[in-house]
Length: 370
Ligand code: XIL
Image (cartoon, rainbow, N blue to C red):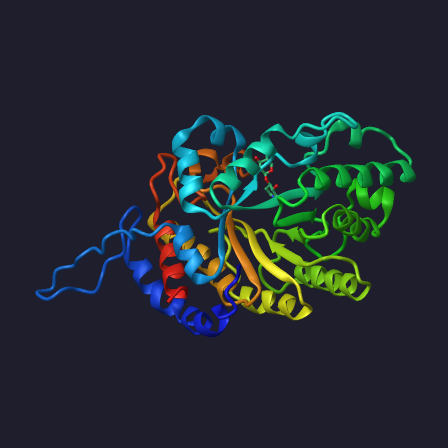
């Protein structure tokens, strides 16, 4: 539950977080804890690493801290599973709820890996973000190459959403119903859904998901919508118009995939605040900050700042409910496979050692929880 006091009591603290933290972060180098103020006699002492887990700190800050979960690692690597359970109070299946995983052939559903994650979450007192129902990627070929009429495809989408959301009814906190429907210039992406069904597929998807699980909180989710820009403006207009029509949309997910080569947007709180005013929740749903390899200290510092900027944008926004990282360890990051020559995007290294990005996140959460 979000503590309603968070913004009143924490907003002020969070407003000062950047000023407080950035100089310290700049002074630290990768793998080191931040340097504390000089002790008497001029020597520097290192503060002990926080004994608090991220989830304990997030609890106190009135926010959820989540991670995307790799199903194979969860099943096969105890160290991975231990950290997911210990550090996070929300989880998102990285791939296990996507269409190609769940309905690889028409009408045949496979929920094995997704069910395992839902059970893990229950056992560890975690909430689950469902991800994702309508997307242009990771569609099975029977959908993309099926040459269906508009009516058939609409019915296929309806069926898929109804079956999947019903399967998990009562177990999903927030569903990413529609993912990445916009281009950078704010026009709608020319996906199979837009081509065959027209723009109305978005409202339909939310209505169908709501029918199947009226209590799940339904999100639109996209990348490059951190700050105010043509794409986030288009998402804003969409959400505003859907709300006016009474379409059940209750949240906007800002994926938060950043790259140290580009400046992190510093108007995230301004952007999220306008969604707050529309009456929807917001969340950072897929935070990671990639670095061209090999990474140098300046890039690691830029990464720390980018993580802070995303988290603080959320902490400053009253109804920003969660901060989810897209995987917590470099060992299983999607980045090297997708962005040639880039990596080290996560808050733990590939040997499960927390990085300085972990430290700055725990410090921000600590301050926000005071
Ligand atoms: C990525 C996964 O991390 C990869 O394992 C998979 O191969 C491709 O998809 N935006 C999203 C996520 O909404 O679902 C994507 O996840 C990353 C970009």
